[in-house]
Length: 96
Image 1 (cartoon, helix red, strand yellow):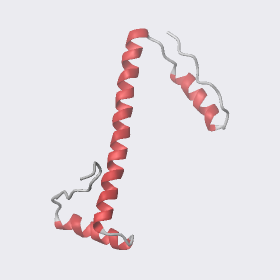
Image 2 (cartoon, one colour):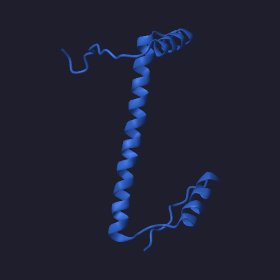
Image 3 (cartoon, rainbow, N blue to C red):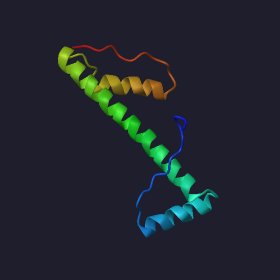
């Protein structure tokens, strides 16, 4: 069997959820199976990004606690305002 072989997995859902999946699948002209696989894939993508963001946040917090380097909210807001206006500007310098 190949590394990416598909294997069936059973999940238990209530009748209301099953009917909702069926209605949406019919409306999208897809199978319920396709819709559930797509939903799981999207959920995993979103949650993996959240987890990466959480880890990056913890790393940034630890770095701040070690060295105290930061930018103020006003500095960050001014930088982001420039980016929103389409200006390709460097981020502000971190300071203690």
